[in-house]
Image (cartoon, rainbow, N blue to C red; front, side, top):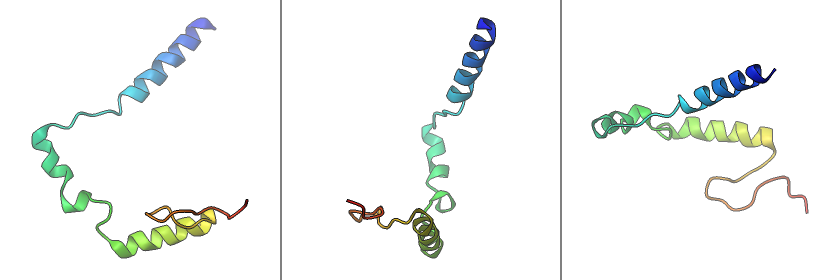
Length: 72
């Protein structure tokens, strides 16, 4: 039982630490490319936010104070 727990803890640690990556200075140009930017299509962003806030029954969150269901 103890060996299985240690194995599970080791695998979890391995999985959580393997996703980190250091970006080299010469690779940063690729990350700043237009296709890598999340806000490159304002219509798609507005549609996504409309769907998201409709599901969550909330508004705001993008520089607007408040939001939520309005319960006190």
